[in-house]
Image (cartoon, rainbow over all chains, first blue to last red):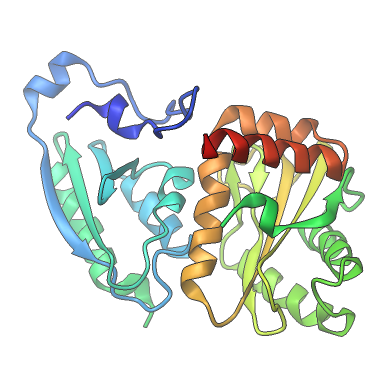
Length: 121
Length: 157
C-alpha cells in the first residue's frame, strides 16, 4: 500500500501537509514489518476532540510510524488534525497499524486506551 | 453537511479585540446571538461550557487555528462562527504557536453523530495550508462565504 496515495483526499488538487509524517525511506520500509490491530470505539461520545488528543499524545511517545484506518480512510496517528477527521462514533471499527522498533508496544498502548473508552462511559 | 450550511450568516469577527481565550469566545458568542443562532439569556451558560472544555485541554490544535466547541441543549442547530486575529492570540495551543483563526462550533446536545461530522468537516479543510491561509485572508463574511462556496463547487464537481 502506498502511503502518499492512501493519505491523499480524492478530489483535491493539493496535498494536505504531512510534514509531521517522517519520510519513509526504502531502507526503513525494508527493515521493518507493519503490524496492525483492529479496535472498536466503545464510549458513547465516540472519538471526539479530547480522546483524539489523548490518542495523538500517546502516539507521539513512540518512534514507530503509526496510522489509523477507518474503512478506506487512513490518517497519521501523530497528527491531531488528521485524527479529528476520523469522526469515529461509538461502535466504529478502527485499524491501528505501526512500523518501527517500538511498533508492538505502540499498538498495545493505543489499543488499550481505545478499549478502555478513554476513561469515559 | 457543508461549511456554507453551518457558517452563520455574518458570523465573522474580522478582527478579534479580546486578548484572552475567554474574551475571544465571548466575542464570537455575541455574533451568534446577534444572528439569532443562540438566545441572549443562554450565552453565559454556553460560555461556561466552552470554557470548561478549554480547561480540559486547549482546542488550539496547532498551525494557527483553534476550534473551541461544545454540545449544548440551548443550541438548536449546528452553528459556526469565525474570528480572525492579525497579531495572533495566545490560546495555549498544542504547538505553543499563536492562533490567527478561531472557529467556534456549537452543536445541539442530542446528536453526537452530527457533532462529530461537523468536527470532521472543519478539520478536513483545516488540514490544508491553502484553506488556513484563505481563512486568514478573508476580511468579510462575504469573503468567507465565497471561499466556502468555491470549495463546495469544486468538491461537487
